[in-house]
Length: 438
Image 1: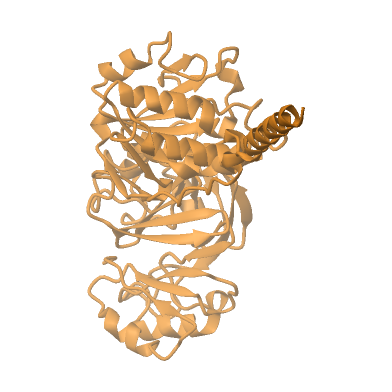
Image 2: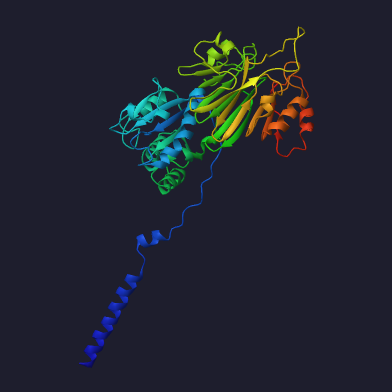
């Protein structure tokens, strides 16, 4: 009897021990709770060739990309909009997708397709039961840039499908979105690490994407604003190009300086006055497209149809951008007959608001009282070309008065820019930047 009880006791102890050990072992779910997030991925600069690259814009629709359902998507739209504008301006193919039940009218207005841009409709894999591969092969596409929503839906499955079909996949991480950051992180990790996609996927940011040949050798600066980056292209003389939030803005385009058949089409064109090196009708026609708005003076409107006339002192908003027209005229420098090269009330300078940055493009002018009364200018372009505009001393005088944070002398011809640099070298509140703006 005692032996039987001892055996039962041993069996009980063994059974308890086995079940206790089993209960103390972690399940796979328990293990997941201890998983550490992977380190942030390396984002690489990318240069693409326009003739073999397509931009895929996936499912950015009013019903799924809004503040209520997916605010992270709404936040990504301005950068995607700028990438679309850059792609179009430089000849990249742009291809759109929709969810299975959507129509073209459901695409958000900011990123809507042009009439000739193809569109496919499918579930999460945009290659499935669509002509997407045929479209890309027909255009000899080798590389695809993928943006859109949701990250773990259309972006993940379409990017992976593209890689499996032999396309190189470029994913700007600030151009994809989901309802939460984890889904975005997972998508990026999967594409960069999973067999089938990892060898063909490059992670980047929109601002790190360069399109081959787009700068045409011109210098560029990037200025950060509270509403996205402002890209400035220094074309020369009094001619500039700005890119901001998907919009391309040309200042006094002049065909003597650039091949405007290859330049980005304009959303807005500013013309400061009627002289031929500022008002070039051929350049305007080459970059004008449907919907281009032209801001100009009364005298310029006699030569260019359909413009928005602004007079000295006018303020208005054009294409969502606030603009102020400033007087631009001579006080000291005059022709042999005593008339100023630029009479008062004829020409404009423009203050253009890019997010929280105010950019002053002065036009052909001297250091006028109106200029010297300016305040809160972040970036100023001041002309320095004798005998038509200012001496370096006049530019320095104006800069000391209104204190722009960054000063670009432009339209400076053969003037020695080092004179200006030396005049302002003790001013820590004004950064003088010299670019190729003869």
